[in-house]
Image (cartoon, rainbow, N blue to C red; front, side):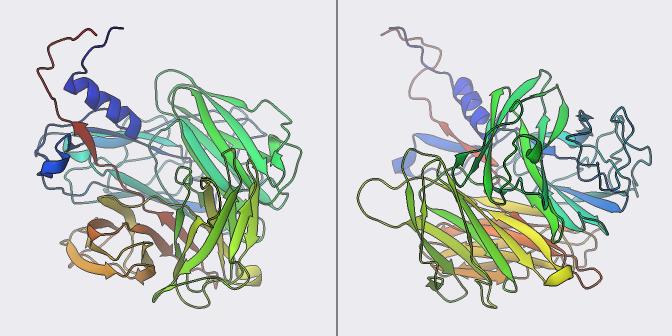
Length: 529
C-alpha cells in the first residue's frame, strides 16, 4: 500500500473545505499548549457567504449589513469583501412572489426599481457588476438599503484580512400582507448537508427553501421531508438542479400531498455545494427565516427564548437508527428548571416529534436544554428548533430559534440598532466568561467592550453595549474568554402598529480560524509503506 505524507498546504486545503473556506493565511498563530502542539490555529484566508432573495413583496424593505471584526494575529494584508447578485431560476409553482404582491414578469425577471445606495456601500440591483457591501477596513460595518421588490439572492467572498469572521446580515420588514413582519437572517456558508426541523407543509403556512449555488458548475440537491410517522410521500421529483451561480426557491408543499404543521426538511447536496435557508410565512402570525439546526448531537441548546413569548412550539427529529429519550430543561436567569408537564420527550427514529410548550418562560428570559434521559444503550443524536410567538390575536409575530452550536472563539451579529437588540448568552455546563464588543457604527463612532460572567445552567439576556458616539447599524461580537461552553442568539425588535415585530438569529462560532496540524518531518519527502 502506498502512502504519501501530506504537505502542510494539502492539510490546510482539506481543513478549509470542511469549514466552507478555501484557504488560510500565514498570520501569526496563538501560543499552543505544550500538550497540544500537534496543531496550531491560523486565520482563514477566504470565506464564502450566500444571502437568499429577501422578498418579492411591493411593501418590503431590506437592510444589508456586512462586517469583519478586527483580530489579533491577522496580518494587515490586502483583501476584499463583497457580494454580487445571483441569477434567479423559478417557476410559477415555486416562486415566493406568487400571491404576496410580488412584481415578476412571465420570464422570471424582477422589477427594475433598483436599490438605494445612499453612499453606504453599493447597489443590489440584479445584473450589475458593482459589488454589494464592499468593506474598506476590518472593525467598521457597511450597510445599504433595498426598497424594491424582487431583490436578488447574493453570492459573495471575502479574502485576506477581511475573511476571518466575515458576516453579513439581511433584515427585511414587510408592512402588510400574509408575510407581514420582520424577517432576518445571517447569510450562510455553502455546505452539503442541512437540517430544518420546524418547517411546515400545512395550508396555513407557505414555506420556501431557497437553494443557492455559488460555484461555476451546476449543483444537485435532494430534498426529503420527515413527519410524525416518518418520511412523507413525495408527489414530485425531490432532486433539484441549481444552475451555476444561481438560486432556486422551492415551495415545500409542492413536494408532497401530505399536510403537516411540524415536519423536518433535510437538504443534501448530491453534487457540488449549496446554501440553504427556509422562509416560513404564517397566514395569521407573520413569518421569518428558519435557519438550519446545528449538526445532529445527543445534547442540544436552543438559546434566547424571549421573556414575553406567548407560545413556543418545540420540534425535534431523530435521524439515527435509535429512538431518542430527552430530558427537557429551561435555563433561566438564576437556575435551570424542568417545565411543568414537559419533563421529557420521546422521539422515534426517523420521525419528527412536536410539542407545544405554551408560555414556557413565564415572564423571564430563558434557553431550552435537551439532554439524554439516561437508561440503557448509547444516547441518540437529534436536531431541533423552536417556533416562538409574541403577541396575541391579530397582533402576533413569529420567529424561529434552531439548536445552535457553542461559540468556541467568537461569533458576530452584524445588524444592531440603537434600540431593540437583545443578546442572550447561555452556559449549559460550567460558568463561562465572555467579552461582548460593539463595533463602530456604520456612520462613525468607536467600539465599546464589556465583559460578562454567565453562571452555569443559566441564561443571561442583556442589551449589548453601544458604540461610543456612533450612528447607524453596528455589529456585536461575542468572544469566549474562559470557562465552559457558551451558546448565544440575538433578538432584534422593530415593533410597528401594535405588532411586536421581531427576528432572532443564532450565533454559532464564526469559524474565523482553523486548526492546522504541525509538520512532523520534512514534507518534501515521500514515504512508501
